[in-house]
Image (cartoon, rainbow, N blue to C red):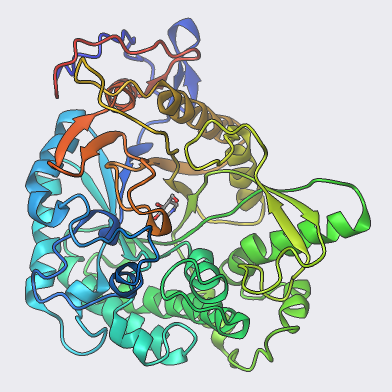
Length: 490
Ligand code: IFM
């Protein structure tokens, strides 16, 4: 359908791998999956519907740790699901990655399934499929049932076991219609921001607990892989992944101390997750660093083999690099770097984004190439996007040229990775909708669709209209023109 972008783009003719088309256009390979992503707590609202139980984010936000905001209403997606799917369809999105709220499916994180909760996700999946949109389901995007946190949370082994039970329930309920799965989203954030730095739910500041949480999130992933495979009727056809958030790490100086700080951050942010998942072993240097704060007794024989259960794909969430230098005491507890108290992770000045994150598209190529060289299975970018202070203009549109450029440059980085031989299968922009940005509440807008949180009116931003053209044509212009559409809402 005509989205009224006015943006001219030639449809590519010749199929093939990555190619270039007219006037410098670059083409995505056939089957390359383009779409958008969200997560349950960030958009759903409806926290009291379906018999949903409280999650750690309800508790944490209610205590005022998200700038006084909560996910109680969020983008009201629980009630507006059909409208949101229709909007995705009008944008022509071939794929949608979303997460399932564990406490909607198991209100206390254990025991029998809550049918009303499952019914919502089944209805969502059916609505997507009816519009020709492929669902990518993530089981855990940080909204742990509060009852499980009350019983110890991710630092206790039983939480990983409960997660496998939950995976089996969801697999059995949706496996006849969902092919692409991810177990856990960004376990680094769940463990280190949640249990060490205390800036995410549940807000604990215990380095040893964070180290145990990291292990049990990985173990939960491995157990869930088996549980899903056993439950999915698709069997071999299913694609099971975990979603990591790797960062290229740059040392800001070339002293031994700066290089060691970079090694430590690379270890905690990247290798602590990828090496056990891909190769069944924790990096020795990282274990050495962590032994300063943990006896590591939570790691049992056989766990690493479970964590390394074969997966079919790896999700990559990429936003920016980590720029690191040595600074005595800069990461003393509470910080997300347990066992490494002397690292400073510095945002380069002058970032154009509203949350101060740098824009470094070539870092995306770098992480994709690195993971590929390290033996990763097929890769998907499960998240990539940027926050800007968007406003609906007098013409009724959101002229988010900076975001459009950001997405274009990161899509080009994906094409560069493909050119370099990386088996990259798709890209999900973060995010479909403006949403609850965790500790930042509603102050950061990542959506390609603007949400007026007072009225819940959705306005596709210029970036969405432009992205719709990329999706429709399967091509990326070398110098994308500013969309000049007529302002009609799709
Ligand atoms: O909003 C988050 C998302 O939940 C996880 N990845 C990073 C995004 C931006 O901070």
